[in-house]
Image 1 (cartoon, each protein chain N blue to C red):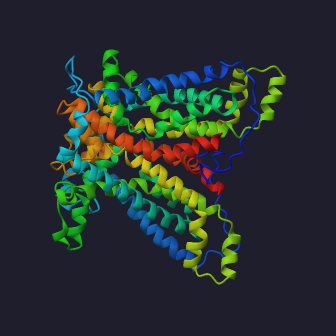
Image 2: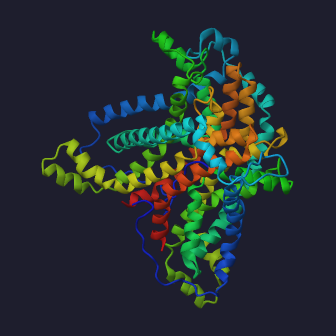
Length: 298
Length: 303
């Protein structure tokens, strides 16, 4: 799925940004760097800015004035057209449904495996660990022919349920890697105390391990949801009918239909990415914290 | 050190459960993992030894024929070359830009969180949407890139970026760089914040210039981050498929084919599932071999 870093998640704190005490306070030099970075950031984000502007102008205005001009007038019609023709009501529902099924289930079974690897006496632990982590290196396309056959035999092609298994499997290595390293940091004394009180492994897992690991679970769930929302190849080979397509596959079709309608295309792309942009902006502290928590350890 | 650091191995296992109890925890994930990842990957090895077309009920075992065919397929040679270029460029450029941004952001900068947010944004977008956005920017007639070139009087440079052999691969790599710069930036930024200031103070006292400080204090301290960035980028780069499929479908002609897309074309377009699978096996073996040191380091740390 997407490139996510299997690093240790300790706590999803925003990486604190301490002002280096020994260095002189922000002065003219700081201002210059800020300005340079600001220009770079504007340049970096300009494709998205351009997309928003284009999506909000009539096609005639776009063609008449060119893509880099400021619009003479604004309109919502592109969004209305794109929403209908792009079948976004359906693809949105499908992607959301898939994420709602896949993410909680994936996080739960990965947490269970992670717990067994981190805290239980399990035979062949190293072997299991190595085998599971090796999954990080396996490209999806090596599995598509057998998966396709498997799903056809099971009658699960062109169904969201057919995607569930492969999505879960490809999410497991990363989730287990992160979660087991988090569980490992929970002090053993807590478990011993619970054992004395007569708690079994399952009670310990559900009443101690999971609650204590909320930060890691949330981070993993968010990254997993992003990966699920964005997955393309399995959805491409397994889903045929428009009624079952997810956002990435739907967007690809849409792109073909709107090849000559630049403003409509921009609106459609925007419709497809807005939820993920909003989620990212709101949840970025979890994402950034999760991706980098380990690196701050030096 | 990010993933390989701070291993405080808990020697005493917390729970002394029955022999099979841990397996109850492990089983659900392991069953799914084996059924939908390990088993398909391994059975691809079998299909790569057959002449299956992907449709018929029957097929023949042909031994290593598909593999012998690979070096004689000109598209495979193009794909291998493209994979190598892709790997080198989409690792080197984002890493260097990401490091530069991280160092700049680590200085006395205003609005750091917003700047960081902006530079990482492309990384969360679906690859297909990134392909759409850039396909749109590259549009020969109405695209922003050619319009910009015309605006500043460089009309001669305006060209069909995705439509000609000479530029197509590079044009596809630009959005990949756009997307992949955020991660090294975040990682380096976090790592830079972990370098104790005393090191720089000592270096300053010793009369080291900024440049010397960079090479003798910053870079060595970032070694763990370099390792993670390199390992994960390498693993990631072999998986390239979505972006090329959605932007050029391997074209024009076969100019931007990589192993992943050429595999797909063989299986689903030319009905040579056996041969296509052999292509996938080759690149997967390379990817796994390259990834093993990283996987081992993760396993070791955890024990």
